[in-house]
Length: 311
Image 1 (cartoon, helix red, strand yellow):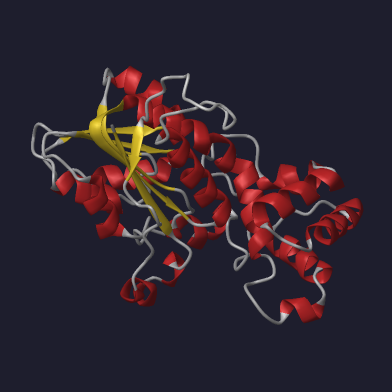
Image 2 (cartoon, rainbow, N blue to C red; image 1 turned 45 degrees about the horizontal axis):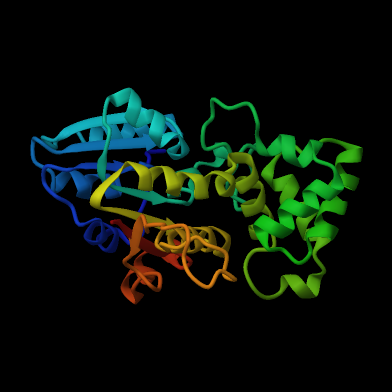
């Protein structure tokens, strides 16, 4: 399967990045180079694009797609959480903007062997970086009931988390749960039939939770925003697309904290810290997909874009 990915909120993100033709821009989740292509279109030969992705197939395919652009390009196999190390290794002290699309690409969902999708039977995997050892199978077959309940409830916001965890434990006591199809069947058994009649696929929230845990998606997001902010030039922009409330809340709150000058406790009558804001929030409310985009790409339905600027 070719690495195809319909970029969500494409034009809104590129407009929000406020690109200078000679600037330095990073895509921390390169994917199929949808956003990257639009960035490179706006850069001249003095501009620099840096694409970062954990998925080596994404880097290979995107490298070919970006060859036609004249700007300087660096494609790096890494996680966006390593942005400071990536820039240091490239000898780039500051950047003018960075985007992150915090979601699973269409390719990863549709490529059955990756184990991201509850719609296709495949080995339990869900690793965005296949060079890592830790996979969904380790979580499903090795976490205890309390740990399983916690991640399914917190990361999947699944009200049947405890019951699902209990059914997983019982099933794996008979034999290991090895495929996505087997896990889906366990989840369906755990959720009462009446609760399965309405709403999303019964396995959606649990699969989301396991994917987040496998790739430590939430654990690295807040610190990464701080690291990006530190490396932005004045006027540089950070654009982040999220796909569920937990991620969006982290982005919203981190942007708010970095845009607040005073860090003194609220009981202090006057500011004593002489703090300075690092960011200015551009989007007080997140930008959502248009009706037209929703028709073209239903997977964009839960996407939210937030933008901030270095001060």
